[in-house]
Length: 191
Image 1 (cartoon, rainbow, N blue to C red):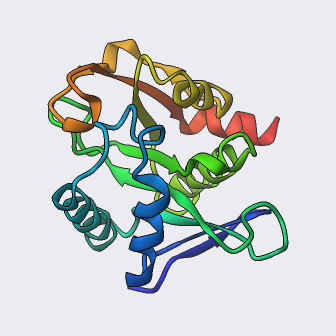
Image 2 (cartoon, rainbow, N blue to C red; image 1 turned 180 degrees about the horizontal axis):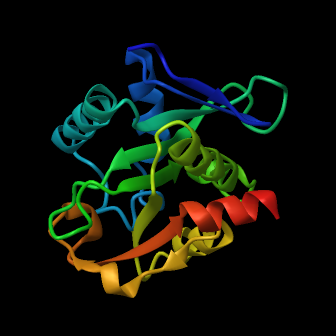
C-alpha cells in the first residue's frame, strides 16, 4: 500500500513514521489535551494507541494521519501538531463500521484554524477517495470546542445515535455523535 500524503494550504496529512511517536506524545500527552480523552496516557495505553492507528491504515487504507505544519516559516513550521483523519467506528455500542473523522492537536496549535483545515480535508477525502455515504465524529458533551468544530464543518448532532461509553477515553460519559451526509457535504462544497 502506497504511503499516504495529502496537503492543504498550511498542513500535511501523512502516514506515520517511527520517529513521529516521540514528538507526538511529548506534545499531546498533556493534561489539557487529554482532558476529554481519558487523562494522561500510560506507556501501555500509548503503545496500544500506536498499534490501533497503524492497524486502521493496514485494514482500511486510512487512519488518523500525522498532521504536520508545512515548513513555510509559519506558526509551528515543520512540526507535528497532532493527528487528523479517518477510521471506521469501532466503539462498542456505537455505529460500528461508519466512517469516522477524528482529530487531536497539541495545545500550542489551538486557535489557529488547523483543526478545521485538517478535518475539512479529511471529510473531503472520505467522500472523494473512500466513498463514504456519510461521516460521523464523536466526542463528549462537555467537550464544547470539539462539537463546536463539528458544527462549523456542517455536521449535525444525531442524538439518536449517541451511545454509552465502553471506552476509557470517554471516562464513563455518553459519547455524542455528529454526522454529515454526502448530500449535505456536496451542497456545502458547491454552495
